[in-house]
Length: 164
Image (cartoon, rainbow, N blue to C red; front, side, top):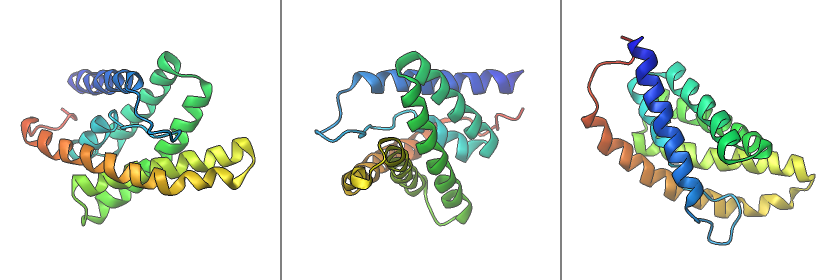
Protein backbone atom coordinates (compact mmCIF):
# COMPACT_ATOMS: atom_id res chain seq x y z
CA UNK A 1 0.00 0.00 0.00
CA UNK A 2 2.78 2.40 0.92
CA UNK A 3 4.50 1.78 -2.41
CA UNK A 4 1.28 2.59 -4.29
CA UNK A 5 0.92 5.84 -2.37
CA UNK A 6 4.51 6.87 -3.09
CA UNK A 7 4.25 6.00 -6.77
CA UNK A 8 0.95 7.89 -6.90
CA UNK A 9 2.73 10.88 -5.41
CA UNK A 10 5.46 10.75 -8.07
CA UNK A 11 2.82 10.37 -10.78
CA UNK A 12 0.93 13.38 -9.41
CA UNK A 13 4.13 15.44 -9.35
CA UNK A 14 4.94 14.40 -12.92
CA UNK A 15 1.41 15.33 -14.05
CA UNK A 16 1.62 18.71 -12.35
CA UNK A 17 4.98 19.32 -14.02
CA UNK A 18 3.41 18.31 -17.37
CA UNK A 19 0.67 20.85 -16.85
CA UNK A 20 3.12 23.57 -15.83
CA UNK A 21 5.23 22.76 -18.89
CA UNK A 22 2.17 23.05 -21.15
CA UNK A 23 1.69 26.61 -19.88
CA UNK A 24 5.26 27.73 -20.60
CA UNK A 25 5.79 29.05 -24.14
CA UNK A 26 9.30 27.68 -24.66
CA UNK A 27 9.89 27.07 -28.34
CA UNK A 28 12.36 29.65 -29.67
CA UNK A 29 10.61 29.26 -33.02
CA UNK A 30 11.47 25.58 -33.33
CA UNK A 31 8.63 23.08 -32.97
CA UNK A 32 9.13 20.30 -30.44
CA UNK A 33 11.36 22.03 -27.91
CA UNK A 34 10.14 21.51 -24.36
CA UNK A 35 11.77 21.75 -20.97
CA UNK A 36 11.02 18.13 -20.05
CA UNK A 37 10.02 18.98 -16.49
CA UNK A 38 8.16 15.69 -15.87
CA UNK A 39 11.41 13.86 -16.49
CA UNK A 40 12.50 15.00 -13.02
CA UNK A 41 10.22 12.38 -11.47
CA UNK A 42 11.36 9.69 -13.91
CA UNK A 43 15.08 10.24 -13.34
CA UNK A 44 14.57 10.42 -9.57
CA UNK A 45 12.70 7.12 -9.65
CA UNK A 46 15.29 5.54 -11.92
CA UNK A 47 17.99 6.36 -9.38
CA UNK A 48 15.99 5.73 -6.22
CA UNK A 49 13.76 2.78 -7.10
CA UNK A 50 14.74 1.21 -10.34
CA UNK A 51 13.42 0.44 -13.75
CA UNK A 52 9.91 -0.79 -13.09
CA UNK A 53 8.78 2.14 -10.93
CA UNK A 54 10.33 4.73 -13.26
CA UNK A 55 8.82 3.08 -16.34
CA UNK A 56 5.38 2.75 -14.73
CA UNK A 57 5.23 6.41 -13.73
CA UNK A 58 6.61 7.51 -17.10
CA UNK A 59 4.03 5.60 -19.18
CA UNK A 60 1.09 6.53 -16.93
CA UNK A 61 2.14 10.18 -16.94
CA UNK A 62 2.36 10.28 -20.73
CA UNK A 63 -1.03 8.66 -21.18
CA UNK A 64 -2.78 10.83 -18.60
CA UNK A 65 -1.08 14.08 -19.61
CA UNK A 66 -1.79 13.38 -23.27
CA UNK A 67 -5.48 12.92 -22.65
CA UNK A 68 -5.70 15.80 -20.16
CA UNK A 69 -3.54 18.43 -21.86
CA UNK A 70 -2.85 17.14 -25.37
CA UNK A 71 -4.18 14.91 -28.09
CA UNK A 72 -3.77 11.43 -29.49
CA UNK A 73 -0.86 12.68 -31.58
CA UNK A 74 0.85 14.16 -28.54
CA UNK A 75 0.55 10.76 -26.84
CA UNK A 76 2.03 9.05 -29.91
CA UNK A 77 4.98 11.45 -30.11
CA UNK A 78 5.55 11.40 -26.35
CA UNK A 79 5.50 7.59 -26.16
CA UNK A 80 7.97 7.29 -29.03
CA UNK A 81 10.29 9.85 -27.48
CA UNK A 82 9.90 8.34 -24.02
CA UNK A 83 10.65 4.80 -25.21
CA UNK A 84 13.93 5.80 -26.83
CA UNK A 85 14.73 8.20 -24.00
CA UNK A 86 14.08 5.60 -21.30
CA UNK A 87 16.28 3.02 -23.06
CA UNK A 88 19.12 5.55 -23.32
CA UNK A 89 18.75 6.63 -19.69
CA UNK A 90 18.64 3.02 -18.55
CA UNK A 91 21.77 2.17 -20.55
CA UNK A 92 23.54 5.23 -19.15
CA UNK A 93 22.48 4.39 -15.60
CA UNK A 94 23.57 0.76 -15.94
CA UNK A 95 26.90 1.72 -17.51
CA UNK A 96 27.76 3.39 -14.22
CA UNK A 97 29.84 6.09 -15.85
CA UNK A 98 27.11 8.73 -15.99
CA UNK A 99 25.92 10.98 -13.20
CA UNK A 100 22.25 11.94 -12.96
CA UNK A 101 23.15 14.94 -15.13
CA UNK A 102 24.57 12.70 -17.86
CA UNK A 103 21.63 10.31 -17.67
CA UNK A 104 19.20 13.22 -17.93
CA UNK A 105 21.07 14.62 -20.94
CA UNK A 106 20.85 11.22 -22.63
CA UNK A 107 17.13 11.24 -21.91
CA UNK A 108 16.62 14.73 -23.34
CA UNK A 109 18.57 14.07 -26.51
CA UNK A 110 17.08 10.66 -27.24
CA UNK A 111 13.56 11.85 -26.50
CA UNK A 112 13.96 14.39 -29.29
CA UNK A 113 15.46 11.80 -31.63
CA UNK A 114 12.49 9.49 -31.03
CA UNK A 115 10.02 12.25 -31.75
CA UNK A 116 11.78 13.26 -34.96
CA UNK A 117 11.71 9.64 -36.15
CA UNK A 118 7.95 9.51 -35.56
CA UNK A 119 7.50 12.88 -37.27
CA UNK A 120 9.40 11.60 -40.32
CA UNK A 121 7.07 8.60 -40.48
CA UNK A 122 3.89 10.61 -39.94
CA UNK A 123 4.61 13.35 -42.48
CA UNK A 124 6.46 10.93 -44.79
CA UNK A 125 9.48 13.14 -45.37
CA UNK A 126 13.01 13.22 -44.07
CA UNK A 127 13.03 17.05 -44.14
CA UNK A 128 11.84 17.02 -40.54
CA UNK A 129 15.31 15.71 -39.73
CA UNK A 130 16.71 19.18 -40.37
CA UNK A 131 15.41 20.11 -36.92
CA UNK A 132 17.62 17.47 -35.34
CA UNK A 133 20.71 19.62 -34.59
CA UNK A 134 18.57 22.23 -32.84
CA UNK A 135 16.67 19.59 -30.91
CA UNK A 136 19.89 17.85 -29.85
CA UNK A 137 21.25 21.12 -28.48
CA UNK A 138 17.95 21.81 -26.72
CA UNK A 139 17.84 18.27 -25.29
CA UNK A 140 21.39 18.63 -24.03
CA UNK A 141 20.75 21.97 -22.33
CA UNK A 142 17.40 21.08 -20.79
CA UNK A 143 18.63 17.61 -19.83
CA UNK A 144 21.63 19.13 -18.06
CA UNK A 145 19.48 21.61 -16.15
CA UNK A 146 17.05 18.88 -15.09
CA UNK A 147 19.93 16.58 -14.18
CA UNK A 148 21.37 19.23 -11.89
CA UNK A 149 17.94 19.61 -10.29
CA UNK A 150 17.76 15.83 -9.75
CA UNK A 151 21.24 15.83 -8.22
CA UNK A 152 20.19 18.61 -5.86
CA UNK A 153 16.90 16.92 -4.91
CA UNK A 154 18.22 13.42 -4.27
CA UNK A 155 19.83 14.14 -0.88
CA UNK A 156 16.49 15.45 0.40
CA UNK A 157 14.63 12.24 -0.36
CA UNK A 158 14.54 9.60 2.34
CA UNK A 159 16.91 6.70 1.75
CA UNK A 160 14.14 4.13 1.93
CA UNK A 161 13.04 2.53 -1.28
CA UNK A 162 9.48 2.74 -2.53
CA UNK A 163 9.39 -1.05 -2.47
CA UNK A 164 8.35 -1.08 1.21
